Length: 372
Image (cartoon, rainbow, N blue to C red; front, side):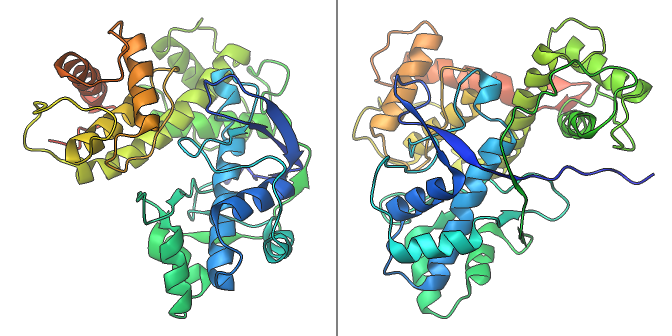
């Protein structure tokens, strides 16, 4: 029997938190189509070349769908799907004016998204303006420059995300619902929820090889799936019964997102190689340079293990977003919450980072150290 597959969908609506993830702010529910129009009108200029607009709309759509598909925030206990904070997600300005040509393009394209061949989830298509902020993703102004040189929107996307991307078109639209099927999954269960469970456990098993691989992914909860669930529960200190109830299900979702993100951070880490691990000078608001980049990189890695931290842009500038992340880390580590990175905070963070990157399970590194 060939492996079954999951089919992502376009949600009819999306819940947006109007602030940072950990900030007290209003949640608003808007149609997904209107969300993409709002972000596109907030992030890019309507006077840009059409191919630049199309490339950015696809990136915006894919990024948001990735968060929805992975239940990134709900699996961490939040009651929203995405935030309006550019430190974590995309710029969304509730109630803003929408540009006519952007609206028309979104109407045409909103059922399309990017992914890697052979993968299920939409691509987490990171982007930044490319002038005041750079990142390991698409440069918005760079996309406009390429479009003016005659690049098609697909050429632009491949320039930034690699040749191995494909565009899914005509994705189904349906009302969003939690992925948890409502009843525990156990021996004898079958269906798409079991497919998702098997798919997640197989991906997590690449980082935690003690989890037996489930082959084939067939949507049938048999002894192999039960064994994988039991091992996952053992590793993550859950009640070991081989049954995927709510606690096990959402822990699997959270770890799935974490290991996928760690894979991205591992590849990015080579950019932040430093010869000297010691901090030469304290870092504070206004600091910049390679040590700020390393600080931001380590905070991003640690954020996947400390719920109080949210991912931040790695731009080498110590702005308010980096300060807020430092404050959150200092509070979680029992340090004086000053927002100033001195020796105590730096050593604490590098030790925590080294503990994550050096962890091995069954002799296999969880996250091979990119600085070695």
